[in-house]
Length: 224
Image (tube, rainbow, N blue to C red; front, side, top):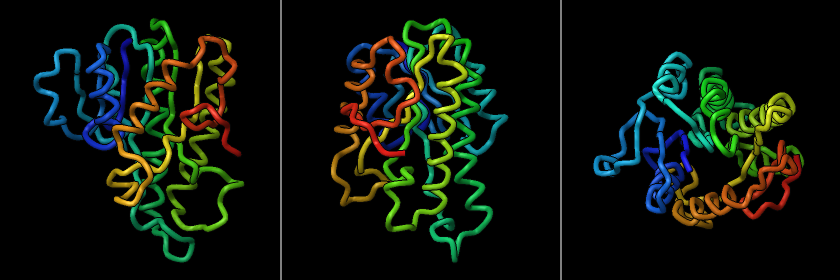
């Protein structure tokens, strides 16, 4: 299986890439920094780009040749300075939407032809339980919540527009993960999250039954 993964330099993206490579998959990574572990990985190719810069994203995706079976849009930001309604800064809010909402759409659009040549045509948009409108009872994380909720709507739109062409697009919640974003008190490690994501990918049927869904890695649905 050939994957394209964004945000491979750390956290879930790093663990996902390393586990996929260890089991024999190939990975084309997108991110700002070449992972230090990648030098001796024969099936790993890296393209440098800033997720907040559309032109860099398009250029990086143009360097990917051939078929892609699965796209995992994983890179994200909390956008410090966009935490609450009283104190959010417009620039921080713009960063949240640039990285969390627009970048995944630009990547998906840029790699559509590659995905069309693949056997899975599967697009995983990494979402979060914090994107749930029904689940928001505490507030805070304003920019992160808003941009990820918008990403969920983008998933619904992609699923509707590309589903008839054989694509499956899913908003996936990886859980609360011990990363720089999730913090040290999170429930699971990045390695555990990555293993669960790969299990989810392997279990997705090539039918469209899950197209446009918002789910946990065990397949259970989340409220929009």
